[in-house]
Amino acid sequence: METMEIGIAFGVAFLATALFGKWWVPFLRLKAGQSIKEDGPTWHMSKQGTPTMGGIMFIAGIFLAIVILGWRRMMAGEFGHLIIFVFALVYGAIGFVDDYVKIKKSQNTGLTAPQKFLLQLAAAIVFVILLRQIGYLTPNLYIPFFHVYWKINWVVYMIFAAFVIVGTVNAVNITDGVDGLATGVTIPVGIFFAAAAVLWGRIPQGIFAAALVGGLCGFLLYNFHPAKVFMGDTGSLFLGGAVCGLAFALDIPLIIIVVGIIYLVETLSDIIQVLYFKATHGKRIFRMAPLHHHFEMGGWSEEKLFFVFSGITLLFCALAFWGVSGRYVL
Image (cartoon, rainbow, N blue to C red):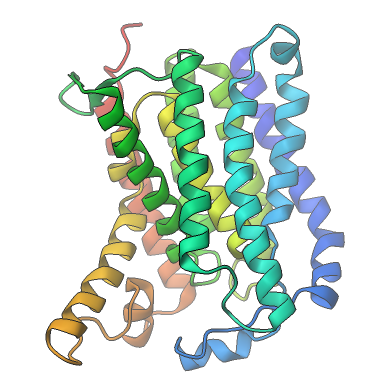
């Protein structure tokens, strides 16, 4: 019955997102065209005017699915899936404000970096404290693959958690630079968390993870190259929050390093490029950062980037599942 609920959550989110998109995408086309970065790839200028804020589609689909499939549990006082959703939604709201400012100004800059950082940091701290209060989170940091625990001071854990959450959220945002890429990369991550939740009997988290996968699959109908709509910061920050929310709610935050390998590499390529450019007064390691643009300039199509990066993530997620399978004694 519980496994069936998770499958139904996927289906509801998929259908809701796909159907909502039939109305939402034409609406956005009239109201919310994307401005392309002037310092980005020149061949992306053809995407100027493609509607953004499409992330609202899968956010709505996920919400519908977790309410329908999680209603019985909410009536019994279990709100695990809803807590993760609200946490991700806070990040989505930050992204929404950023997208809205960009659209109003008709440019590719919205909120300032300090504004986004402080808002994201505050959300991370509140979420981690809440998880600790309701018993989802312990100060014993689980080390995947070795199945050992590192007990650390709660204040230190808070600093660690805030760093991981804010870093991951922005890493997902960086990955969202090619049609369907952040969508395709996050689908295997959602599958991993759904499988882990089922393995450990954490059904509320499993419902959310399955709804996340379903919503993204529905969104991919519109976001695969050539994209009819972009998720915008509304969607990418929500996804970052969802990934972190699941990892911390299942008390396996370090697994983000493995399942989020593409997020990590994309971010590191950006950091390395900037540091090397400054240190060498103008030289570059990559043709263009982040990494997906480097491969684009090397001749890779957006479709190839989608399948290769998503495939790599799928392999690492399979490795991660083996690495955490001993987290709880069944």
